[in-house]
Image (tube, rainbow, N blue to C red; front, side, top):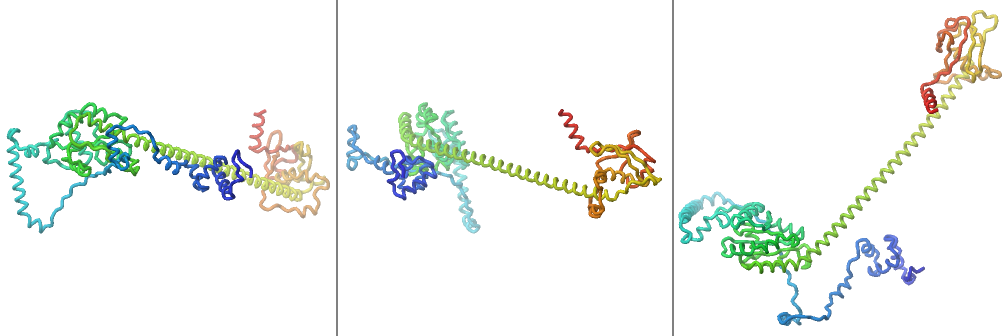
Length: 525
């Protein structure tokens, strides 16, 4: 077998040559590029074709070789040396796997009504509980008028409404709860530029996962002593607000008051043991799953704005490249999907055009075949009519009476001027009882009657009148002056219509279609 470039194909086995031929027939790739790809695919044609069309992924062997640790110069300080020496074999500590970030959907509170029998039994206890509750509420209402320095804190909290109030706080839908938190936060700390997400926690988590952004969760307990100082000095500091609002940082901020059911459930699931509590959540594709949301940073307790901002920046800088890689991968997948969709759409449009052309071609062929069939039918009909006309002329020529003799008295002498192509001028005698239609028949059959030998008796016997044929004369007979046109009437006689003699002319009848064609030709000329 001939070689392709520097590659000698004859050295391949018959199975490899068959695989190469099958692969090149499908992909039309050069042999010098096809053989290395088949070798990397262990000469599996299906795998090689998939790599050609879908793109060849990284080589597992090469990746394993790259993962082998190599000796390199290390530069570390004294603290890093002590840390490394505490690890087994002096290795650096492995990257800790972050805790998962569960998706919290608040469950509505349900009230169960006891059976009627139990309700009757516990009715006295229920009445007593309501009485004690009314008494204590009245007592707390009275204590509320005491000065704040001597007023019990529990009574103050229970009687206060808004940000710090817990009395009469109804459970709302997640979106309404977020709106209430934002409104109460502004009432307590004034207007601010923090971009709190106006929706439920589950919606904020889904949005961060969908858009590959960081989710900053801030949980507050108004009853905690450090909440106000943390909010005013740390959370509302210009540096923190600017960092959170920076579009390049891709941060979605969600806040909640633990007095609300949803925020309380989030605090319980995220192991919040101290307030104020903040945590940063994002997608961690390199931690085992490309769809796993994890807690990458916890910020617990009061801290300065600089420390708070430094911790956030460290976590964002650590996981931002991973999110950027996933974002680029999704963009490439979307581009490939859009390209495939455009190719499919272009193919469908091309296929539709081809189908339309094929349909038009079939319709044109069918119309041409139908026109040809109609033309053949019309030609056959015209030929059949011509044959019947000729048969009628021969039959009618045999029925025309001969010219009267000189001794006959009741005759009509006519001078007929025929068209130049028919024989010119004719002078002939007819019996006075001859009908006008028979005069027309004489002119129609004149060439047969005037031919050599005329119509013999055998031919007269053979010719019969064609069945279903109605003859139509293509000329008319008229007198020049005064002009009178005589129709082929089978009842009117020549003696009554013309008299003893007369001069007649034979005029060809021109149909409307022929006259239109003649006028068109004259217009073109």
